[in-house]
Amino acid sequence: HSIYKQVLWAGFDKLELHPSSFKHVLLVGYSNGFQVLDVEDAANVCELVSKRDGPVTFLQMQPTPVSSEGSEGFRASHPMLLVVAGDETNGHGAVQGGRLSALIRHTNSEPQAGNCISTPTVVRFYSLRSHTYVHVLRFRSAVYLVRCSPRIVAVALAAQVSSSWHIDLRFVL
Image (cartoon, rainbow, N blue to C red):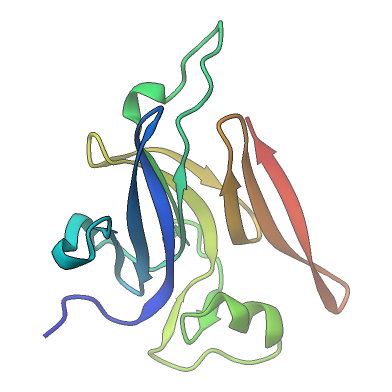
């Protein structure tokens, strides 16, 4: 019997251990949490992280940031995983069937009773070093996806303009 419910998102990524050392991982977002699995050796897949604390609709490993002259930010917390989830504290609407695509394609549909999750409006920075969230970004519209480089975190937001939807891109330095 699985401890997780519905899979909302899954994808492969690279976990940066050192500047020239990587490990291939499988990131899985569920309706009640997420997992990071080490898939470097197909004969020996193992779990690196398992967290059950609410629906997760997107995951992305953040590369180690480029060193700067000023503040080092969260560099000491790396490796870092960006977790897109609903914000249970802000009362935003629900996504039908636990899928972000439902929000974008079926804007006039009513969510089915008992089968809803919060609209994904937060990006949480999860440290694989300390196994805690070290930072949270909150947005007013749904987070569609996140892309990272060593210098920038780009967040694509779904924003409604009259009766159609478009993607608004935000950059976090």
